[in-house]
Image 1: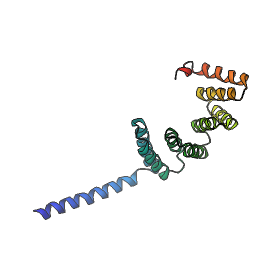
Image 2: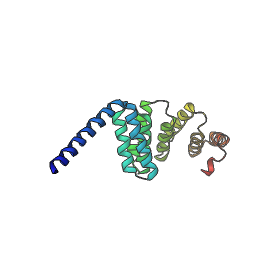
Image 3: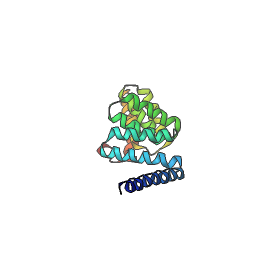
Image 4: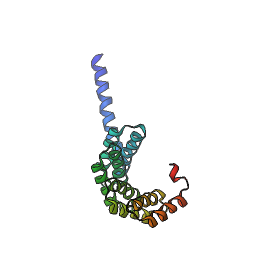
Length: 171
């Protein structure tokens, strides 16, 4: 009786592996990457940052051009205080998708933090070029202009940010 149970269990396990591998072949590379990306997003929401990094990394390994996975992994690294890895991921997100306004914005934030103000302004400007309604990019560029002593440009950007999002200062 035991041999039959073990044999049945072994047959079931083999069938499971065959079915799993067959289904895996039916899922596109992009869909598999998206599954890990979504797991990473769920991990972030739950505060499981190390697990999020693992899942974003798997998504990137499957699809090395997954710009949003680089951007989101960069956000996790930023939240963990690793600005070097965050900057590298934002840069890679931009390389894989030069129209990723969020990646320019996020990298601009790091440049502002490390006092590379001209680089921050350049990245905010690029984010705004890509998405002219990006209120946060106008606001942060305005703050950066203020740090550089350019009150006129600072006021213009901060006014534009408020026009686009009247609650921007509340967020």
